[in-house]
Image 1 (cartoon, one colour):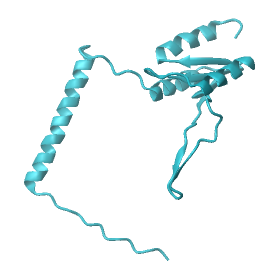
Image 2 (cartoon, one colour):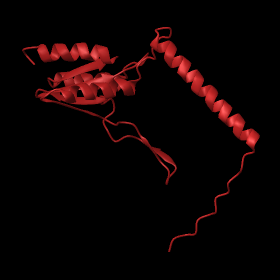
Image 3 (cartoon, rainbow, N blue to C red):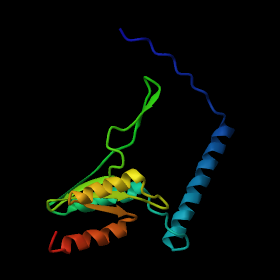
Image 4 (cartoon, rainbow, N blue to C red):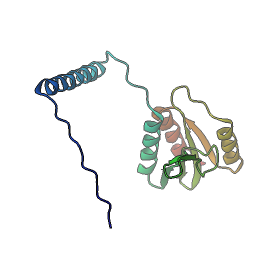
Length: 158
């Protein structure tokens, strides 16, 4: 038998409070619109690419090519709410963010954005991949990866 649910208490806002909330929301919209227009006009620097954006772009680019497949490796831990503890990820330490098979060759891509640096475990993982005749690459931007990927696809030995 299901437990009875607690009644939800709603609070009511006065008309003055609603007007103030509406005014604040409109101010935020105007500020965002002004920033977008300034960025479009070249007055503001574009936001730097995040690691998530670079990773998603790499996967999209690789999977658009025939004979190529890439996927993201989720190697972070999770919060276990039942036990109130943080569980470590169960992947090998230092494993790359993206693993791809490009025309039959294993390619491991570590994504770094901004001032991020490779950890010792990531460097060791890269050395292990290269020792096994795979390719290991650190991508710092989507554009940098595109250049590398185009050269890779044009290469006769690849």
